[in-house]
Image (tube, rainbow, N blue to C red; front, side):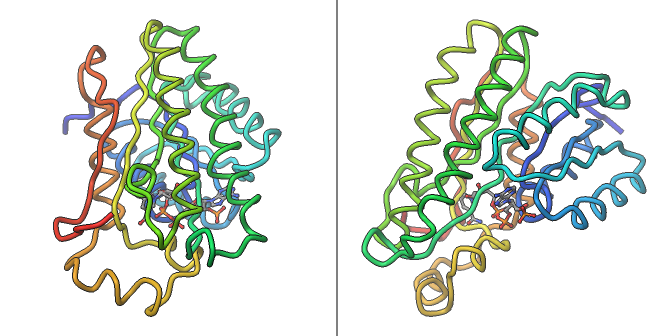
Length: 252
Ligand SMILES: NC(=O)c1ccc[n+]([C@@H]2O[C@H](COP(=O)([O-])OP(=O)(O)OC[C@H]3O[C@@H](n4cnc5c(N)ncnc54)[C@H](OP(=O)(O)O)[C@@H]3O)[C@@H](O)[C@H]2O)c1
């Protein structure tokens, strides 16, 4: 079987669930070794066992994506992992969370934590990875934005603002690292059914009724397949942004 990512090592944050988990599996199927991170270690251990059963290689590094010291430990662990070649080539900046409600209705006590993970932690990871990959003169940084990080929605305005911020940071980073052969891609999904909705506080009233008209929604593996595609393009081809919606999603 063709394994275009053989020899590559990819760090995937938020790998205990949803898009991150599906992405780790897609990259392993394509031959990559993966360093998987999230807070729930038992979930990561299960995923690592699944990857080992597939004949793949995985390193578990549990930690909080909003804490700089944990992010530094993740990157250092990847560099010390012999089975991964003592280097990393790809970073998927995926860990994140939503928050139901707009500027008026969302729970303000969660604003700071949301920005800590979705913006500050993600930016710290992007900065450290960008410095390292620029020095190596190649590599990929894939950042999970959102359609609400391009089209603000009154139903998730504060969360959407965090995705506007990370989109700008991704493009700023791209302009700094592209002369050094490093690609940056912003992936903006529409509605993907995962644990995201429960964590964000969505329910039938504030979510289910609104999206019922959109028909079949996305699953995590659809986003993972797109990420895999981006990473397997020739190195001189950088798809900088990609928006992926369920076909029936009219808005946002
Ligand atoms: N689902 C959607 O409709 C949708 C649409 C657009 C964009 N996105 C974005 O896609 C990304 C993945 O979402 P998903 O749908 O896969 O959601 P999910 O199933 O809830 O997965 C989120 C992942 O992020 C991790 N995470 C959350 N907070 C963390 C923290 N403080 N420290 C470390 N890890 C943390 C979670 O792991 P632990 O809980 O184990 O730490 C989990 O692995 C997010 O950035 C989200 O904003 C999702």
